[in-house]
Image 1 (tube, rainbow, N blue to C red):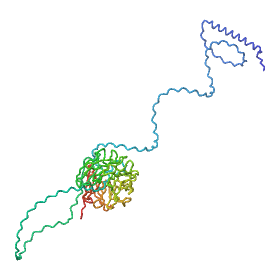
Image 2 (spheres, rainbow, N blue to C red):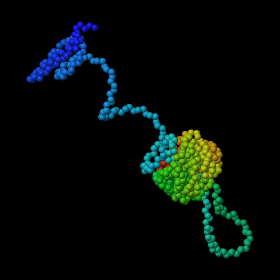
Image 3 (tube, one colour):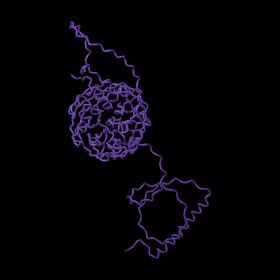
Image 4 (cartoon, rainbow, N blue to C red):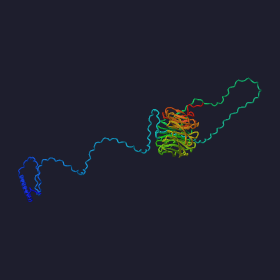
Length: 590
């Protein structure tokens, strides 16, 4: 390559030295001028920028000279026009995270959100234990009688107090008392003096026949012949026996060893067990006594006469939920010995008591805790202890129990199966009734409430009960001693009839049933027309106001029906004495 405008390499090596010396001299002159200046002059105005010259060709790089001292800093030039933005550089790496700042102040509360969709219902929790019964409140003032309400749907076994258990069968005859000492022999009376005998006259000759004498006086009247009574029929006798407070719930009646009626019942005003002993056969008056006033006691009473000739009463202790028994201390039952027989769980509702073939008490009742029919067999005459047995334990079986002793000497119990709405019967397998044969007698519709059982003149069971489906009074006549089958008959069905039934056998050997007409609120009686009670004559005994609840019927010493029941309107215990075997105010012989 040729370089025509350039000096020789030797010259080039010499020139930088010369240039450097000249430059240094120039700088020294300038510094001296500045230092010698008396005062700084004012800065001159910036000159106008001249046009930019053409860029010359780059010369060869000379050797680096020694560094000269730094000159004074020049004034800032006018900022040049900003150049075009360069292309964006690549993204830098993430910086190190800074220290977290202090939390900010809490923001205002947000508006309520929309309600979420309801979740599926949770599984049902376990059943809670029974709560303790509350203290009975003070009885309110009696309101006016409202219109009759329709029958409600069957509820649980717990609600308002249920009806009483029916009366027990008539007890065995009391033991004959010892013969009293023979009275003293009376002294013979003084003999009267004998009259003097007259002398016998001589017989005279027969005289001529005289004229006929006057007619003699009328002879004495002959003995009275048998007569048929044709008086106007007398009415049945209705008597309020106890009107102290609200009394007469859960009545049960039997005939005592003195031939007079004995009635157990509940005093709802004070929560007591009471007894009324009739003063006469018609029970138009009675002596009443409170037997148990400890806590709230006396519901579901049932009474019978024990082998000792004294009353024996089963009943429910509501406060402690127990089965209790009261053994009367005398014929009038003015006092009694009370015993708690069963306190396991909630037990003792719907009691019914009778005397077994062994002369000891036998009690059927409902075990609410286990929903079972239960039986207690007394260990002694006073029933101070007993052997308890569960006889039937499907769910809710054993309400409305009624018990009697069959012709075979074994217990026979009617009761209701609440789960299926059926009438059932249990026939005890032994005297103590530790086992039994159970039979469903009626499963047509909703039946089996207010049962009552007795033994008919044919030695077979006869059961009265309420048919809720047909609002009727119904009867079942057992086909055999064990009552494994029966003939069922509706006896009375207009309106709503057949609640609070009680059955016995009349002096004519036919069934006699007391019950309530719930539509008219009357006390009614049905007299069976035959042993099987396939038909019956029905009569209204008491239609005064609202009556006929908690009925119990027995046969008095006069062979006529005697019925205890509750008068709701006056809150009284009431008794009806039948005037005849039919318990009809219109019956008379032709």
